[in-house]
Each structure stands twice: as structure tokens, then as C-alpha cells.
Image 1: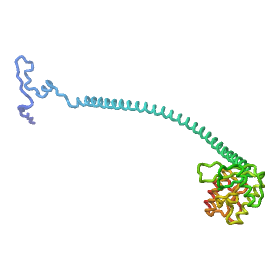
Image 2: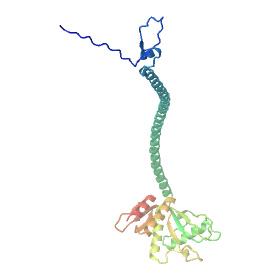
Image 3: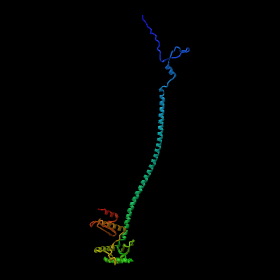
Length: 307
């Protein structure tokens, strides 16, 4: 016979979490002795959970980011608009500058062409002027081809043209040429420039260039044959008889200047001989060299610089 033991009855262990509540005879739940205090408490007061506020914070953060981005975009848009406006102004200014530069370039090319034409014309004018100067020089030289200069002749008191003719006739006798007054077309003394001590030059035009050549040759021969050379006494002067007299062909102003410079070449020993013939200035470096016709001052400078 089996025995079935019944477990002993246990008194219920009081639950610390159960709190006794007051019971009244009218309460239908008299048999309920305890109620969970935590459940009652949560029903009476519900604490907000922390995870419930996270979406709100994210939304606020998102709004702040949007506002920040919008403010940055707005500022950049304003700066970009200002830069765009300035770039437009710069572009317009550059366009105007390009137009002005193009205009100036065109004008520069035009002026350059005009300057080139003017330079070419000026060069042609200079060449033509040189040709005209040579022609004028030839005309002046031809007009003087029968003229002679007599320098350093003392001045007589109340000197007249006849006195000058008489001097030349006496001189022709000295050099054995035998001239008379009819051989002289014209004779005069240049005006004094204020220096009373200086004796103005006498200009004499003979009857022909051939006679002038003979006259100058006789003068040269006399000076070579006599150490004293020509003096005032040979012209008939009784006072200041020893005054030296210098006779040469009359040169043009240009010829006289070139002859003066050519004598500097001789003094500098750049040439051995220097003389004039038919109004032309000639130099010669040595006995075997060819004669050089000095026509311009540049020739003198070139000869002076030669070693």
C-alpha cells in the first residue's frame, strides 16, 4: 500500500515589496491583502525616459546646422555677387583698355610710317642740299677764277682806287710781268672790321684767269728766288717798306675754311704738302702719293685721325 504524503503547508513568506493597505468592509476586494507598491507608484507618476528627449536634441542640432549653413551660403552669395560685379567692371575696363591700346597701336604704326617717310624725305633733302651747295660753290669758285688776294698791305692816307692800281703795276714790274691798268678789271680793299692795326685785304680781279695764273706763278718764282720775299717796298711804299706782302688766289668762304683746316694737317705732320689750285684745296701725304681734293671738313677729321 503506497503512502502519499502531502507536503506540509507553508505559511506564505511575506513579500517586502508588498505593502499592506487598509481594508474596509465595503471594499469588494477584501480578499486582496497586498498590492505591489512599485506598480502603483508607476501608475501614479510616470518619469520621462531619457531616450524620449534625444530626437528633440537632434532636431535642434539639425536646425542650428541648417541656420549656420544658410548664413554661410548667404554670406558667400553676397561676396560672390560683389566679386562678380567687380569682375564685370574689370572686364569692361579691360575691354576699354584693349580698344585704347588697339587705337594707339594703329596710330603708332601710322606715325611710324609717316616718320619713315619724313626721314627718307629728309635724307633726300640733305643729299639735294649737298648737290646745291656744290653747285653754289662751283659758281662762286668760277666767279673768283680771275681774282687775287693781296694781304697785309699798309693803308695810305686818303687811299683811292688809282692808288691800288698803281701798287699792282709796281708789283708787276718787280716780278717781271709788265701789267698795266687795263689788265685789271676791278680792285678794292675790304672794309675794316674796327681793328685799326689790322690791314684789310685787297681784292683784285684780273682780265682773265690765264693772266691770274701767270701773275701767281711769277709771285711764287720771286719768293723762291729771294729770301726777303715780297715786301711793301715792291708796291711803291716809301714807309713801312719791310712789311711782308702775301698774295694768293681768292677762295670762297668754304674754300678758305677748308684751306685753314688743311694747314692744320700739315702742322700736325699728317700731310707733307698743302696748296690751292683754281679755288680747290689740295693736300699730299708724300712725294709719291696722289693729291687729295679736300671737299668737306669730315675729310680733314678723317685724315687727322689716321695713324
